[in-house]
Image (cartoon, rainbow, N blue to C red; front, side, top):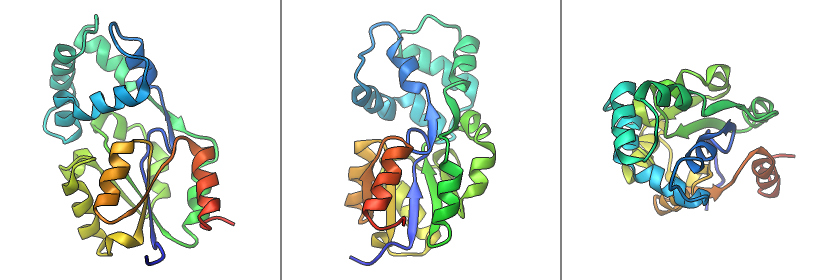
Length: 199
């Protein structure tokens, strides 16, 4: 396997603190298991449409509330939804700056217009940024990885991808990327050190 020249990061749960699954867990009749919630989130038709850029926030809220048993108005749900993205984990921007000395560094996120607008200065820490709502493709679909590889013009095996969803990691590996399951910045930093990508 060739040494990686590109490091590609998911955002929520890897570099950015999110409260999405805490909020979903508190909804009536929902399971407390994060992996189950992530799977349901990834396969939700309302979520996919919004994170593919196919619908706006209001239509997303209406469709989401049809799928999930939540006692909120669409407006109240959107207000809560906007709070799910909090801030980069402490040290995330510094880590990216350190890595950019040796690698091309980017992000690949399933995201949407509401949350993307809240990421602010973090997006400036990357050499390139990919979001599902701008690409028109979404993880874990094969097409999203094909679009990224086409844009970067590198072989898939030269990309090292980090995500907190097992389904996304499996999909990236099947496409030929080096891919790792990580949750949170301390785990990410430890993995990068173990793989020799950090001193």
